Length: 245
Image (cartoon, rainbow, N blue to C red; front, top):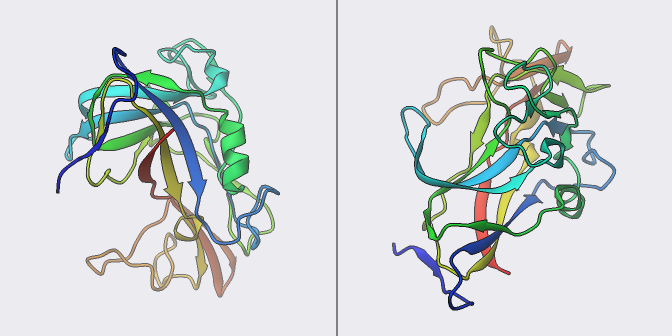
């Protein structure tokens, strides 16, 4: 399959413009901050990038990577910005949680993205930076808040996972000098915060929640509401797309 090529719109420009967006594709999302069934997922975000490729073993970036959004709480200091609860590097700290359970319009208004200049090239993934692990396995302050439909209140969770990689652009995204594009990551919380019967002998899963190989899926966190109802949380998958501005 040939890569998607977005033809240059401005002759003589040295870079391309990219604007970061999100799309809440969960059914019945509302602007109130929770879904219609009470589901909520809030994360601390540092930045978003386009990357040429990702090593499947180490998860390291391969080739070029270009930042397309930075949290305003970083004050433009991407090298030293980190989430609250991690000591190093000394710099601005992210204290606010970004609420993914709102409507697409609300989440993008909160992002308040502007066009970022990126180098022309071919990109397979978008990546979201959630923390920087400098000498600590995880923060001492929760990095996430979540709530399933059967829970009466949000629960805090601290993740040592400092980044999320999107699904692949298919075909790869090719940007030329002068292009102007919106990069959108779509997500569905129905597949991230789930409810069901507790899995027998597995406190971290639900009955029927299986991997593609048939093994039990283990969630990041679970909360037992009663003997017959359990809510569980995981990161959502992010499906990338690009459209000309």
